[in-house]
View 1 (spheres, helix red, strand yellow):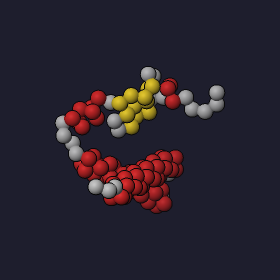
View 2 (tube, one colour):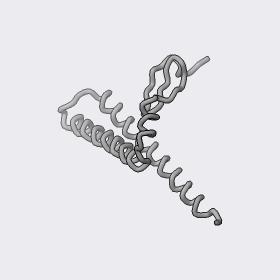
View 3 (cartoon, helix red, strand yellow):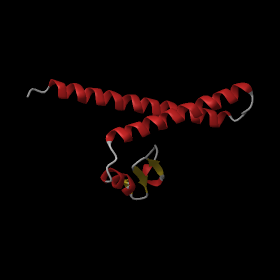
View 4 (cartoon, helix red, strand yellow):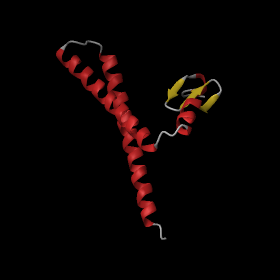
Length: 108
């Protein structure tokens, strides 16, 4: 079969991991949720993470443009990470707005 075999990779996402045994939820994220971390604080942390990726990408782009950094590969990887994170954040925002609008349409 052509393509990427996810079961052999060790991809890590916040709260979720894909490894030898397949998709599983990390216990630390479950424990954090039980400890009382609110949705707002989780969302704030995600936004700060995306902002950090954007700033890192901008810095690497500036360094590449001024000749301080000659590694175009790292620069492009940082730019793509920032782009993917921003697109994901926009999709999460859209889903939140859609859910809010659906709740507002409910009759009491």
